[in-house]
Length: 463
Image (tube, rainbow, N blue to C red):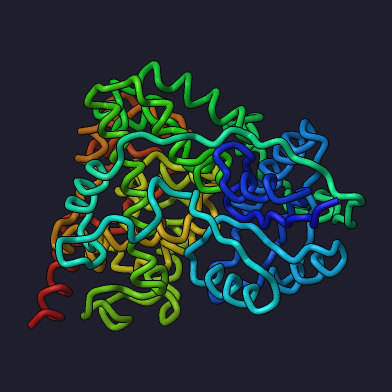
């Protein structure tokens, strides 16, 4: 019997369109393994919401592998050490994996190469980072020319089918998924996530959800900004954990040519763009790209109880700004937040409260089921004006007018029961209209006051 081949899984929990599985299956019996590696530096150990999703994603993959008379081996520890140990147990010498670009995974890939034959494959993005370059041969920094180059480079994709998997002579030991305690128990705070997501985990469920969404993808450009309706696909956690590849979604849209479908493809390209930024600037998730936005620029929660309380009010959805509070409560309940509201809530923390974007990035990292190092950091730095390609700091979102503009009344009434009886336009700004219920907090700061403070801080630091 030929030598067993290890497939090392991380954020690529599928069998379809998986080049590492395809290559391993051609070479010999396949041993698929997921290592729960918490040896992550700084504040980027996997958050609680992501762990909840991971449990269900791994469970779905176990069932998919079972259809091929195969198994998913679970190990816990430092990835390079556990994979080397598994190779010793099974006689495998080769590990196949999809290439990952987060700083900790780069480190793990480097360590593994010292002990085993690590075969890295590209497969988590539309094109491998660095594929499209400027005329001078450098990586793109600005999204729009990157997007244009990506659209020129992409014709169509040949989606890899599920390979036929042969089993090794004997299976190595595996941890029990339930023993990892990825699901919260005491207390069980995941009730909102179970209700919101249901059983929508794994490749089949994700693709069925996406095929249903394609019925309205032509309306994406308009509806994606309206939080009171379901106008987005909610594919972000499926993409993050690799239950589907972006190529699979692009291919599924091949028969759609509407403006909405084009805008959706641009969002997939933005995901590639974020990864290209991380490849150029690995510390992008913890450090601003632009100078002048160090700790002294911001109001630091670590230095003041009052500022810490403001941060906690934002986290709990108690700022007195209904659109912000609705988004933060949706996030804490479901592990997800509407894209337009993410921008509004992020802008409020950064520019109304003048709190460093890194505090928001860390909160999103812990509470989002789709917490992605590259996308999370790129989006936060775009809003804050600190990124390589970003909105200007002096462009300050007005959350109350955003709420009215994008018709968020029903969204607010859903997530803020204190305001459920208020009709439009009162629900957007009950304090201004003199109808704020006693059990809803007053505004933590006035919009005009906050705007003037932010602009004055900016001017003072630019002089």
